[in-house]
Each structure stands twice: as C-alpha cells, then as structure tokens.
Amino acid sequence: MTGAHGNGPCRVLVIKLGAFGDFFLAQTAFSAIRRHHDGDHLTLLTLPPLAPLARLSGLFDEVLEDPRGRSLGAYRRVRRLLRAGRFDRVYDLQAQPRTDRYFWLLAPGPWPEWSGTAWGASHRDQYPGRRKVPVIERYTRQLAPFGIVLDAVPDLSWLDADTGGFGIAAPYALLIPGSSPGRPDKRWPVERYGELARALAARGITPVVLGTAIEADLARAIVAACPQAVDLTDRTSVPEIAGLARRAWATVGNDTGPTHLVAAVGCPTLGLFCDASIPIHANGPRMVIHHRPSFADMDAEGVLAAMDALPPNR
Image (cartoon, rainbow, N blue to C red; front, side):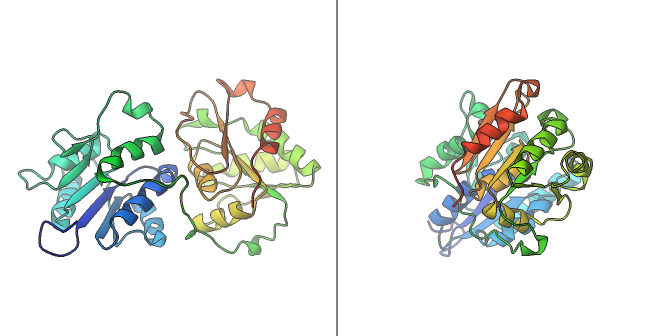
C-alpha cells in the first residue's frame, strides 16, 4: 500500500483507548496489523498510562497519547493530532461513540480510509449485536476485509523481567483479588481467596497476591487468613507481573486487567466470572473461565478443582 500523500510508505493509525486489560486483549490485532503493514509507518493512539507499554512492545513507529477529556479543547487537540498525522488508513479498534466522533473531527476532509463504527466511514464495521461478539472475533471480522489475519494467541515475548529479587521459590500461584474501583461486583469475596490460599499452602504451593495500592486491604485479609501468602501489591511493574506469570504454577483472578495480562503471556489462568462480567471477553492459550451466576455459588473447593484441571505451564 502506497501513501496517498506521496510515494512513500503508507501512514496508518490504530486507535485503542480501552483499559489495561483491553490493551492486552488487543495484542493479536496489533501484531496482525503490524505484520500486514510491514514497511509502513504505524501509529497508535492510546491512553497515557498505556503509552509506555505500547512503546515497549516495538510494534509501533509512533505512539500518540489521547488527552482523554470531554471538553471542546480536548477534542480540538485530538483533531490536531489526526490532521497532523496525515493518515492514509485508520483502524478504530475502540469503535465507540467517542472515537466515532474522531472520524467527524476531520471535517471538511479529506478523510482517510477508516475502519470502525462511525457513520460515513469507508469500511464501516457495524452489525446487529456487535458489542456482544467476543472481542477477538470482533477484531477478526473488522480486519478481514483488508486481508489481515489474527494469530490464535498473542505474542508477548517482548514482555518479561527478572523476578528473582522477590525471593519466591516455585511452585507458586498468583492470586488477583481486585477489580476496577467502580466494579466491586466483579470481585470474588476476599474470604474465599483466603480459603483458597490456605488450601494452596497446604499443598506446598505459595500464594502470591498481586494488585495495586487500592487492593492492599484485600491482600492483608488474605495474608491474615494464610500467613504463608506473599503480598506483592503495589510492588510489581507490568513486565514483572508478566515475568512472575511465566513461571507460576497457575493464576486465579477476577475480571480485571492483570488477570488478562497473565493469561495473555500463557500462564494457566482461571478467570472468575459472575453475571456482573461478560465472560466472552477473555483470551489466552491456557485461560479457562469459571463462571457462576452469583459469586455466592462459587466456593474455594470448586475453584481449586478447576485450577487442577488447567493446562499445565511449560
């Protein structure tokens, strides 16, 4: 593909503004687009907290940071970014009303080829029930008209770190008891995590609790129930989480970003879902969804049995 603004490489923009977990669910799409546009200039527009990871991945020639605001000034800044990029093609993987508006920010034109849900886009990807389709299938359908084929699992070989400094001997299991602050309904009760930690420790498997500072109380409750548990909340970088996951016996976690990360790097992962979450949005070669309509019906014994049935780590 030759750029419309000259004879040089095509200038391509990918838009993905989702949260931490969404970023890793999109990795197969990112890699497939990079492969398809080998030799072209590929730019990602994402949220500021995700920009360092995007740069670390090496998939993009340029990473732009969305100002996030809803003010007129914020939209003007986005317009300047889009127009300055002089893009030949845009893949809007966010495909929500906010990014639909980005298409119209280019008025009065000219417009690039645009794949997304915006009305008037050259490759409008809109169909009944689109938001209920599993996210990987959604990307597959959106990118197929361009001949872009997604891999079965993401390649996150670029994301790793030395975790020896934590001093955790194998075998160990990662516990991810948190969720986004506004969605406590996605959390399996911390008391159950404590019961699970005790059962793991009785087998000689060290429970390791991951999370940010806002999950510190959850970690303390688990350690109180199981003194053998190791609390790493607010002590791990994203590459270190990936490094721990690559070497873990297994992970159990709620529907939250770190769970999707450890699943994406290939750790045997049990995702705990109730009806507050959409279990179709999950990805990883060894991820299994453990779903009950209500967390009240999900006990630690059943979770441990499901962990035992996970495909083994290699």
